[in-house]
Length: 416
Image 1 (cartoon, rainbow, N blue to C red):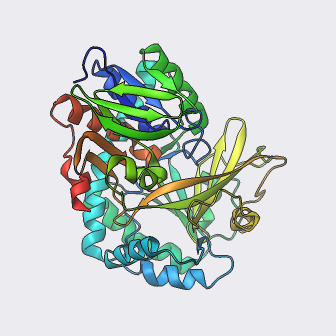
Image 2 (image 1 turned 90 degrees about the vertical axis):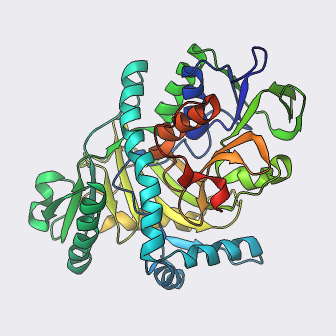
């Protein structure tokens, strides 16, 4: 698609931008990736690393609004909103609330699943073909419950995931949990093990992808802000903090920062930053071997070869860039009831990332309304890592005129 002397410019050097650049380069396009910081240093850096087709249900579940409101009244809730006069946030929550019903939930799930399943397959192909070492591990994802009623209630969800999407978990009674994961405490109600899920170390993945992209001739511009855009007869000129960059087309893979660029591209993505936290530490002596999620406290646990990560929380506090120690304490307290040795010392990293949350829980992939030379690849909510390869391949197919490997319509910006 690109002219011989004009590359496709991908703005955003996270996992989505990297995947777009990879598949565009694979399609024979010249590609430049530009990021306001270092490649892979933002929301893709210290997440929990799950590649999880089982996470097909969007946040717009029936009852989600009431559960959220109740949670906001608890000081130890994993969900929080910084109250402030923000009509865009209020509008976002209203649109979210209107979609918290079974029909819209299933519409979102049917949109997410092709991306999730395709991405799992594409990851395996890409990692093998490029020799990427990112601690990819096929041990599934184990949901663990302390409360018997909550454990039993999940059986309905598992039945639905099995019937509608073929994603089924192995039911594990509490007395048998330690056979699967000895790091768990006695007396827990039970668990559901999604064996088809996998995990990786995201910082290693981003480092390896940078190597792969450079070897494919992709130019990577770091610490360069995107400040303006103008059309020319032959394409576009992107204005940056370090000078102009000519391009035939622009891919906007800027995650939660996308709304801040509305004045440049001419369309405001209905995205709100949902702040998540993680803590990385030394492995405890009794360290889990299987990634764990504790739904009752909304804390996730990921073991690595050298390290151990706790992650969770959802904080709507705008573009606040501080680390709230109370949220980190919730990560610690959220695992204490479940693990024999909940954490290791020392803590080597505390981190936050802004998740790009859409009100229907579905990403935005396609031509920017009113600006056909700009393609959007954003709004992946909490699933950016899980959805990245299929997103990148779909963007490359749309830009090169090839038949999309999955239906593109569910992700179109025109739906919003």
